Length: 388
Image 1 (cartoon, rainbow, N blue to C red):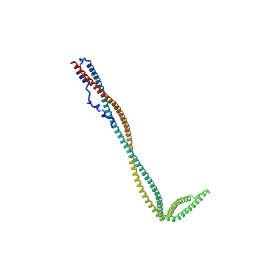
Image 2 (image 1 turned 90 degrees about the horizontal axis):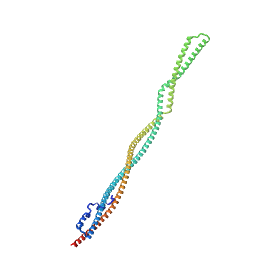
Image 3 (image 1 turned 135 degrees about the vertical axis):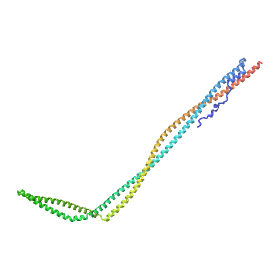
Image 4 (image 1 turned 90 degrees about the vertical axis):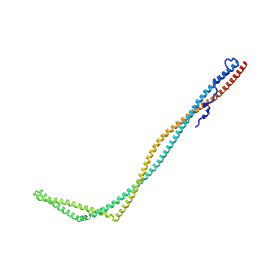
């Protein structure tokens, strides 16, 4: 950056600038030509002119020195301000570069976040697809389980009753054979109990009529009745068990009769086919579960990366805000330094113009002083020549 032309004032800053001889030196020269003892009016006027010119010359040199010092001070101030501007511009450039770097980093992280979110969205779609596939497989497996259970129930029921039929067949035949015997025994016992009841009733009626009862007979009949009742109860229990055997056999017989062996073979073949299909679906479900777990793991990793990226972006945005504020602050500082430099430059320009004017005035005063010295010399020489 070039704010001003420092070389413009090189003559001012050069400490070896040629100087006019000092007024004291000039007065010494004048003293060599004239002494107060000379009372010639023309010489006196010439000497007075020298004194006036010398005084003016000394005043101009003093003003020149003051203005030169002012220019020197302003030049030093200008150089300092110029250095301040360069320093401020360097600081601002560094801050702007830092802001740009942080902004680029934040943009890069933001792009990473967007890409990661896209990847997570893809994983979510794949997870949803796998979940739906698993749900559909579960539904199909459930339907097959229901069909397998129903068919297996039919087969197992058939086999159960077929086996029960075989195990009950001998008992069933015996039960059929024994059934009439049980009924006959029941009828016989019932008839015997009825006879005993009639005898007991007759004995009880005789007692009522005032005839002395045969207690021994009553006791015998009562005991016989109790024995018959126990026997009756046992026969009824045996009959119930016999009837249960017959009922179970006929139940199994009816169920077995409702399905022939070919139908059961078809059911068994169907069960095997459905079971194979189920195993195939279970295998597919296992594959889908593996895919689902893989997608869930990948999504978990992506979620973690997204969290880290969001944390980094938040940190970068904070740093970016600080960097932007610092850049604005340094830009304001730079602009202020430029304004200060322009003010000093303007003052320096004015001071240098004044310096050049003082320099011209010194040269003019020097010429006038030299002219008065020459006139004094000539006047003194003429005066001395006349005195001879």
